[in-house]
Amino acid sequence: MDERLQRVAEAQPEFALHIGATVVEATPERVIFDMPVTPVLANRNGVLHGGAIMGLADNAGGTATFLNLPEGRSTTTLESKTNFMRPIRIGDVARATCEPLHLGKTIQVWQTTVTRGDGKVAAIVTQTQMILDWKDGTGPN
Image 1 (cartoon, rainbow, N blue to C red):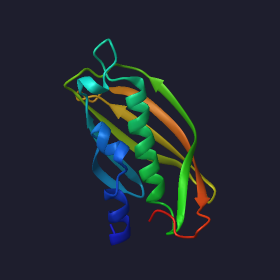
Image 2: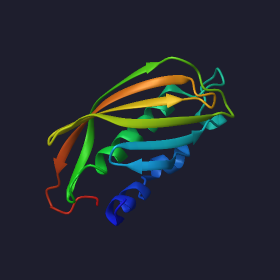
Image 3: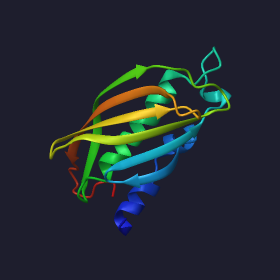
Image 4: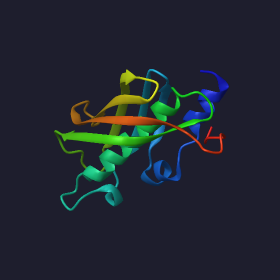
């Protein structure tokens, strides 16, 4: 991976750090994050909160999109759909694997599969990212 892409992959927002998401792999073709399931991320049933799953997947999709953008451009999520299939219990690790479905000039569509430690699929998130030009021309890169 070239130096700019490595910088983009490593420059995670505070939100990702807050939820404990860490980059396992980051290329323009695939991004993988791991996130430990802690009590602070759980719902009242002792499993990973759906919002935490969506936050992890959104961060993965945003990172993947940034890895496919030219310098000076940015992105925002237009739409996100989540199918929840299985719970992930406290003490387990959620793994988000994000891969492209469409890489256009104005939108990108990503699918993130969230698995549990046993490899079973817990959720599938499909999101659409809109490509933006920053008004000041600098962008976040």
